[in-house]
Length: 468
Ligand SMILES: Cc1cc2nc3c(=O)[nH]c(=O)nc-3n(C[C@H](O)[C@H](O)[C@H](O)COP(=O)(O)OP(=O)(O)OC[C@H]3O[C@@H](n4cnc5c(N)ncnc54)[C@H](O)[C@@H]3O)c2cc1C
Ligand SMILES: NC(=O)c1ccc[n+]([C@@H]2O[C@H](COP(=O)([O-])OP(=O)(O)OC[C@H]3O[C@@H](n4cnc5c(N)ncnc54)[C@H](O)[C@@H]3O)[C@@H](O)[C@H]2O)c1
Image (cartoon, rainbow, N blue to C red):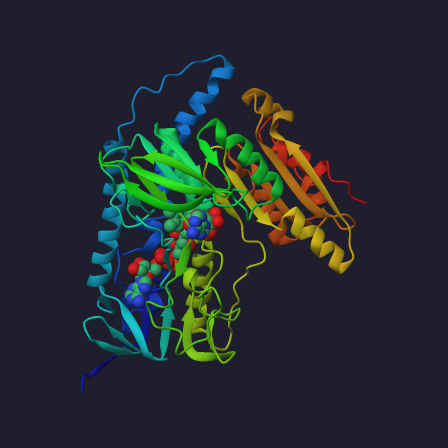
C-alpha cells in the first residue's frame, strides 16, 4: 500500500490559492499542488499579459483618434517581439521566482503536477502520490472552452493561452466570440496594426452588459475593426499558403473570411473535473463547485468539514479581484472556524480593457426594471455623455458615457455603466458609494469634484437622476 502523506493544509491551484499561505502557516505542513504554470491564469495567461498588450494598443488607438484634435501621428511600426519579450521576461521571472521561493519554504511542499480527489479529504497526484489533510482548498480555476468544429486544432488557431507568445504580429486575424477576451484581443491586434475581423454568433456583442453600453460599443468597434454579428463558426480550413479560410453561417448564408491567425475566445470551463470534484461535492449545471457564503464546499447541501473552494472553479464571476476576495475569506476562515467570514458579492465590478474602455457594476437597466416591477419600486436612469462635460470637450469625445441607475425615492445607486476614456478608473467612486451605502444625492453634493476633470461625467450623471 502507498503511504498517504499527511499535511495540515492542501491547496490545489497556485493562482489566488497561492496567496493563502501567509506567516500563520509557518511551522505547519502545507502542500501546494499545481500542474500548470506557477501563479495561475491571471499572471501567466490572463489579466496581466493582456493588459500589457492593451496598453501599447491603446496608445496607438488614442494617437489615431487625435487627428480630430488637429494632430497627425503616424504609426510606423509595431515591434511585436519587443513588446512580447518585455511582457514575458517580466511575467516569467515572477512565475519562476514565486515557484522557487515556495519550494524553499520549509513549511511548504510543492507538487508540480495535477491531482484528483479520491475521497473528500484525500488526493492523488498524477505520479501516484497520495496526500491528505484536515483542511483542503480547491482553487483550480478555469480553462478555455473550444467549439468542436472542423479545423479547430490547426496550428493557425489560437486561444488566449497561446496567442500572446507568437513570434510575429499576423496580418489578418479572425477573432471568434463576443465576450471580454474577444473584445480585448480585437482591440490589441487592431491597435497594433493587424486587420481584424471579430465574429460574434448572436446579434449582440458583450451581451451581459447594459444595453446602452453594448450598443455604443457595437457602434464604435467598426471604426477600428470589422465587427460581424450573427456569424456562427462552421469550420476552419488551411488554404495552402499558411493562411486559413474561416467559414461562418450568417442566417443560412455561407460567409468565408481569410486569416493568418484565428483566436477562439468562446468562454471558459471551471476546472472542477480536473480535480474530480463531482463524485464528492455538489456541483451546479455550469460545472462550478457549490460553496456557501463562507466558501465552504457543500455536499448534499451541507458544508464538508475542512473543504473550501475559491475563484473560477467555484465562482460564476471569473474575475481575479473576486478570486482574491474569496481567497481572503478562506484565509481567515481556515484559522477562525468559530468566527467565519463571508465573501461580499454584492457589487462586483468589472472592466473591459478595450478602446474605448468599459466598466460596470451592479444591475443593468433591464435587470433594475425587472427588480423594480417585481418589488414595486421606481427607478431613475441618467445617461451622461462624456462629450458634454468640459474634459470631454477637450477630448472632442463622441463615444463615452456614464449611465447610472438609482432608486427614485432613496437615491440608492443600483447600477453604474461607463464606456470611454479611463472608465475602469472613473467607476471606482461609484463602486465605493454602492459598497458603503452612499446615496446618489450625498455622493453628488457631499464632496468636491475636481474641475474640469473627467470625473465630472460621474457628477453630472448623478445630478441628472430624477430623485424625489
Ligand atoms: C485572457 C484573460 C484575461 C483576463 N483578464 C482579466 C482581467 O483583466 N481582470 C480580471 O479580474 N480577470 C481577468 N481574467 C480572469 C482571471 O484571470 C481569473 O478569474 C483568475 O485568474 C482566476 O483565478 P483562480 O485562482 O481561480 O484560478 P487560476 O489562476 O486559473 O489558477 C488555477 C490553477 O490551478 C491549476 N490546476 C487546475 N486543475 C488542477 C489540478 N487538478 N491539479 C493541480 N493543479 C490544477 C492550474 O494549472 C492553475 O494554475 C482574465 C482571464 C483570461 C483568460
Ligand atoms: N477585463 C476582464 O476583467 C477580463 C478580461 C478577459 C477575461 N475575463 C474573464 O474571463 C472570462 C472568459 O472570457 P471569454 O471572453 O472567453 O468568455 P465570455 O463568456 O465573456 O464570452 C464568450 C463568448 O463566446 C461566445 N461563444 C460561446 N460559444 C461559442 C461558439 N460555439 N461559437 C461562437 N461563439 C461562441 C459567447 O456567445 C460569448 O460572446 C470572462 O467571463 C471574464 O470574466 C475578464
